[in-house]
Length: 78
Image (cartoon, one colour):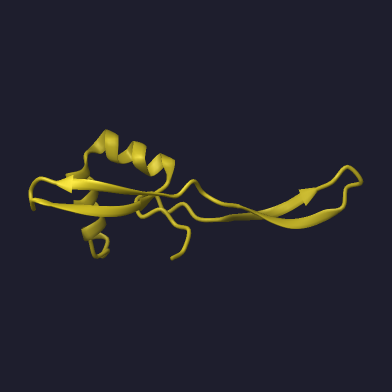
């Protein structure tokens, strides 16, 4: 599975580590992806989402029903 948040779309960032001597080596910044399970009252079942920390805050703010409706509108299968 890719390291990608299903809600915000955050993904891996790339760049360079710069040492004291200013030598550059490639590195990557991974998003804080976590697997969360939510209960959908309208369907009476649980769903599992791969979310970043910011994605969890979005679900807390907007509600799981609104987030799932937006994901389905965008074409994701849940």
